[in-house]
Amino acid sequence: MMPDVHFKINDMRECIRLFFFFSVFLSPGLLIGQVYPGSILRIDHTQDFELNGQGSASEWQKAEWIALPHREGVKTYMTQVKLLYSVTGVYCLFSCEDEKIISTLKNDFADLWKEDVVEAFFWPDESIPLYFEYELSPANFELPILVPNFNGFFFGWRPWHFEGDRKTRHAARIASNSWTAEFFIPYTLLKPLTNIPPQKGTKWRCNFYRIDHDNGVSEWSWQPTRTNFHDIATFGTLLFD
Image (tube, rainbow, N blue to C red; front, side, top):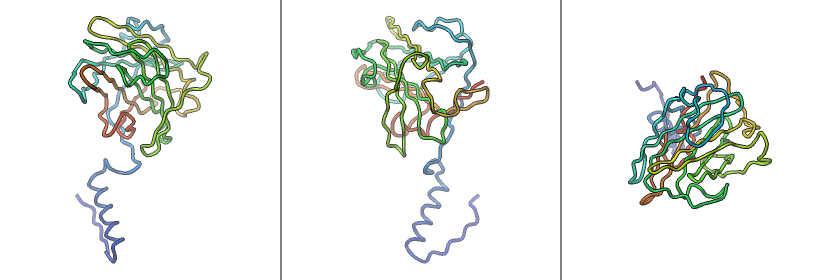
């Protein structure tokens, strides 16, 4: 039901205000600055464990596979992700069908998205437009960056003192028709972002992606985006159980 709203239109300025009122009321998804939680993904607690790039650790058995819908491109490979969290950080496992691996970049912090890659975005406190982006290639090279995003204007910053307990752990394995990627993001690397470390009931915003470069670019994402992977308003919600 429409609200009982009365406007006295005296000039062009009133007409403009009237237009924007009804545009916003009828299209809540377009509210400037408003963020919507999207789907909710529950993440279970675990003890810390080692990674081998295959996802064979017994701890992964408590996590369910989450399929990433195919969004763009000719390739429709099955792509899945699992998540767990511990007292020290967050674990991610990707499983990617792939007939042809494109992964020639051999440096960390390279432009990994230009070849085959998986990506995870974590936004612990949505009141602050800062989030963490992590990319891992089939060749096991990584790109961890902190991203400030102000109304769609964003750029990544490399971590400082990326060593010791601030260092990620990661491993990737290539098989005949697939590849897998495991990585661990320590909470210490995310400092000084707030809402960290998570407790039972904590909510973060997040999204998960894959890019493949067989016969052009194909893309997958857990939550659909309207513009690009940095469309934070469309991120889903990660609920820590």
